[in-house]
Image (tube, rainbow, N blue to C red; front, top):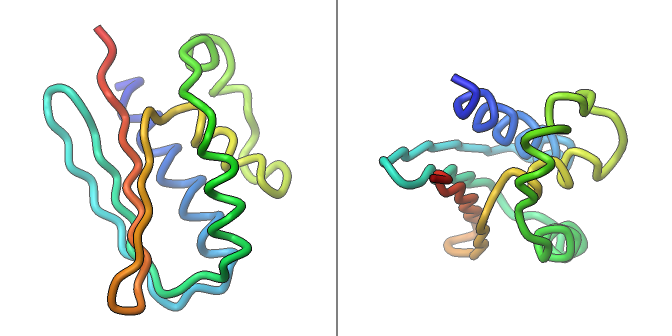
Length: 113
């Protein structure tokens, strides 16, 4: 159950970030396997400044100690950009590409042994 709560929090916070950029389209898909969860976001075009911001934030690696001690303590919608740090601390990998005037984000979370 805790794992599903973390996945929901990733979706909530990343969706909030994207929706605050005045998107008209946002689709979300979740694919779960035994070893990983892939959360895909598909949206209409975003300004380059936001894509650069996301690339900068997602350079950092997942922090397992954060998951044990801190993720539940972070308030919802606290400060601009804060939700992205939470997302970054809960995922292992991200990718982003553009095709047919849409942007595709994939956020991957691997199961830890």
